[in-house]
Image (tube, rainbow, N blue to C red; front, top):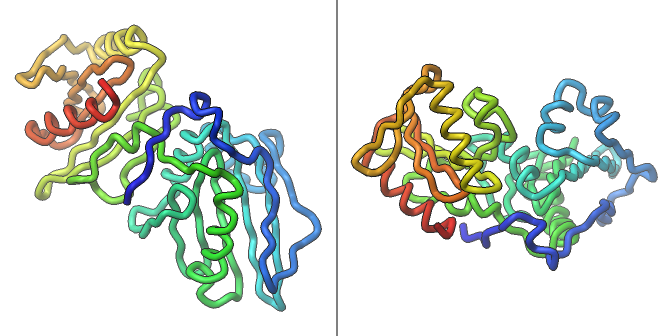
Length: 281
């Protein structure tokens, strides 16, 4: 699937993106007059137990709209997040590994009675009740109408797009908002899994404000792991993490490209070069 790449949204002021949610008309369905709204202060009233997780991905506002046709129902939940990267993040964390994704907005998937997609800073969750084949029918039709109204130029986050398709484990590209690999010092990161034969390796990219911040992060990581600076033949540095095993790091300006899991030197070097090139380094 081909996607344009997205630099951070604040660098692209010309992209038209809706700031509020206008419920779509669904032909043959009656919309409830009230659109429920939730913000950071009361999101727990709608998704108690999951609100803090959504907060960690920059949740700002939720609009809930309900429709009825006889005894059938449709509900649309429109979550607005602080930026497209974090909207992608929450979507990617909830997307099932086995999902068959398609270009709904930027990306989405559907089953018999649900359809979820994300576009711009919006994460949309749609579900139905007592409507046969709703996912591939009325929900898909509605989503394709709604998506361009929310964001006119849907694009993947640049780092996600920089992760090559070859050897990629399906639906493994994610954005982790904080505490990557269980370590607060690593903060947020993009990650994906790659397979070679029966072995699997995790690739991650950490982006920070400047190369200096990356240098400090690596130094802090080395101090935490009590690991000396060890260079490999591929000029990738090795950290012996007591919790995550051997972690290989490749500095690339304001990016840090990392590898953990199976030790696959050829694939590691190939992916490192390709990702660094795609990021413009």
